[in-house]
Image (cartoon, rainbow, N blue to C red):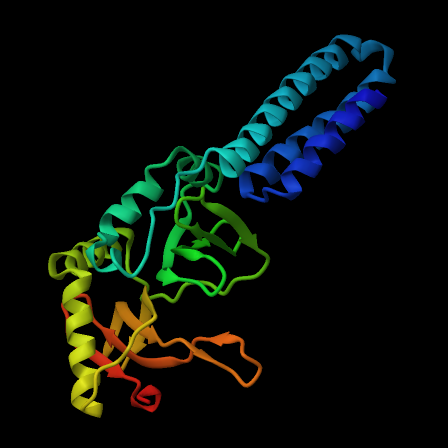
Length: 274
């Protein structure tokens, strides 16, 4: 009996790192079998049932161990590689291709199955460069079955890193459907990130009469409420490189422009125009 509790504790620990409704169901079933097994083993007339429960427990324990180990392997070692992102190629990116590559990967499909298909896109950040690392992608998904967020991201050339965050607020009732999100991505691609860049730079030049020297370029795609518009938006943010009083590299913002997927400008943060 001790070995059964050791096995139970082992995969319970695994599922603490992979919380999901499926994990809770399996743990509950296993706990019920263990309790029933202890009870019926003490009743001499129920030895056959106790034996059946014993083999049921072993079967479920093996399944849980394989399932949890497979999940840890797929998420930790078998995720897709983040595409290279830098100032020379960021404007040529296809956001639809980024989304399809992630969602069609084995690791993401496993996570969708584990969470009963409740992973919903919330945000994508495409960054041309970080202060201490190459540029990359950062995704945020709502995990509906456990009411959490999942961050999926990494610098270009590295496998995606998956991080399940402990708290999350529910999605608003008017949140777009998965198909509407896909359609917004396709609409953005129909214009191209280069087109949005040209519009944002033109907005900046019209406001300041000068040309910006951009060191870091970021595109954020996510849900927003702006005036009468509620839906997926694309924000382009720019930063310049400088030095603080101690000689450290800093990257203050220059300007930010937010668009609808069809290219309509929703807002310009003029207070960042410097």
